[in-house]
Length: 231
Image 1 (tube, rainbow, N blue to C red):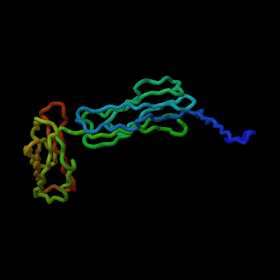
Image 2: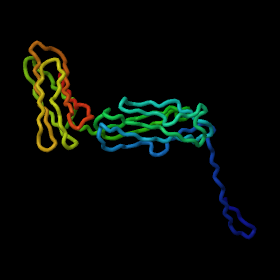
Image 3: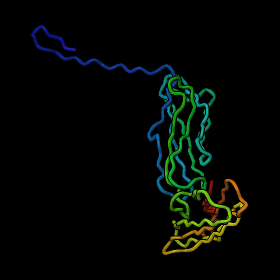
Image 4: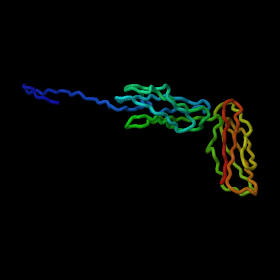
């Protein structure tokens, strides 16, 4: 505001801002709202803590935590009192990507339900790339197309070990008819899986089969799977 004094000089006065705090609970996720784990061995898993704050004027009740995938686990790091999270209070939600639960790049969401009348749930985001010990180059599923009964379909899958001194076992096949699967080591850490499918002449209809490659060394790894199929 500007006032004129009796001497004709202009006087400048600053007016203070008034801040209002909502009488309702206000749920907020403090930074960061998302966590990127980057590349890491899939057998190790990863964990992150998110801070939830009540920026309103009455207690905030957190009603539950929901996951978007069985590959992760999320819960409150500490139990809140029945009266809820008091104004200005904070609590944490722990999100864990489980070991050997996912492979490749991913983005997953966790939802925190609450009684904020404006924002009924908060969204937490985690992302990363869980690297298997043997990485499949390309898609994990192959469509073999239409195969005539009594004929043979052949294909090759390229793989690569992501750690030194990896030892793979003989491929294990689940199929309604004979499948020849042969694993060969190439240059460096590369591997190749050769497949021959032999559907009998009497076979009609859709089918699917899977090929698993056991990891002998190092221990603690789940088998690597590849699934050729046909329609």
